[in-house]
Structures are given as structure tokens and as C-alpha cells.
Image (tube, rainbow, N blue to C red; front, side, top):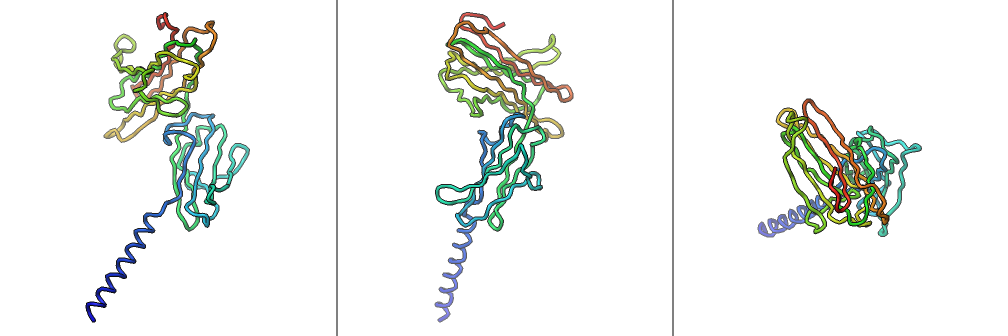
Length: 266
């Protein structure tokens, strides 16, 4: 009889354990946004779209918070609630032309179900517009001066990370100096060999730098380039921008140089 009771006790424990594993393994609400990867810094005056999806069709309508406070709807911010094809509730927070103060931690909360958070970083980004002829060579260069520790740069097109292994791209690094040797840095170059109309779009160069005690502080540096490949051969041969951000004695300069095939980059 004792053996039977022990056996039933073990079965009961297994059932409870299975239920616990099932609960822990359930999907939680998830926030997705219109930028890839999710944590790429968003330039001010861009539109931000955050969509939160529930777990089951019985979930309630979620609420949105920013830095722990409820998000208020106004002329710039709207919230659109809907559902997936399977009836699972969704909610989309739309912030048109986000200001710098839109940076923060966003939370989508389904009462009694769970929540998900997403950190959004808004920053000022300089933009240069460049127009080149078909089959021009275009150089995107990020020059980092004095930062002892940094990650990147990473180049994006329309917020999607560019593949350096593409046969139409070349990526290289070289050491350079600024102001007659005052500072030394590294130039990271991403080159489009033969630009066609399909290469047109918004390009982003981003670097993550570390500084402070034990390099515990991070800062994202970013600049945008809008490239247009014209069918006409009568276009500007080159253009560029230099953007500098300072922190103590550190500099980050981003520039874009473009050239038509057969011309030197000035």
C-alpha cells in the first residue's frame, strides 16, 4: 500500500512540475517596432511605430507607459488597437516626428497577463543629400578620433544592416590624423562600387563608444546620408558632410564622399 501511495505522490509531483513548465514556457506579450535592429538609435523627426501583440484571444486591451507613466494621446501620438488573423489583440503606438525627449523605456502591459518593454533612443542626426550618376562609386566613411574603446561602425540602408559580403560592396579601415597630428583615429570606409537606382535610399553610419569609469558609459553616434542615383548624367559629382560630436577630448566625425566613375574624390 505504501508503494502505491508513493507512486501516486510521484505522479502528482510530475503533473505539477509539467504545469509549472508549461506556464513558464508560455509566450509573453512582445513589442516590435519599425526599425531593424530594434535598438538602432532613431533620428529625431522620424516616425516611431511600436506594436505590441498579446498571447491569446482572451487578453484584454493593453496599456502603454513611457518611463512608468501612461502615454497620453495627442495630435502627435495615437494608439491603434486591433487583432491578428487569429484574434489575438494588438496595439500600435504611433509617434509622428519624434522629438529628442521621446527617448526612454516603453512598456506594453496586458492586465493579468504580462508585459514587455523596449528601450528607444532618439538622437540628432545630420543628413546630407547626394545625387550621383548610374554606376558611380560611392564612399561612406566614418572616422573615429581618440575613443579608446568603441564598437562598429555599422552601416545601414533604410534601417537594415548592410551585408559587407555583397560583391558590390567593399569595406576597409585605415589610420589617419586630424589637425596635423593632434589626434589619431581610424577611418572606416564602406564603398558601393557601382551604384544603380536600386542603391538609392537612406544610409546610416553608427558607432557605439564607451567611456567613463571602467568604460561603463555608452553613447551612440549616428549620421544619415540620403543617396539618389539619377538616370541623368548631368548631376553633382560629389558632396559631403562632416559631423562632429565632442566628449572631453574625444571626437567622432562622419563624412560622406561620392564620386562619379573616372573622377578623383575631392
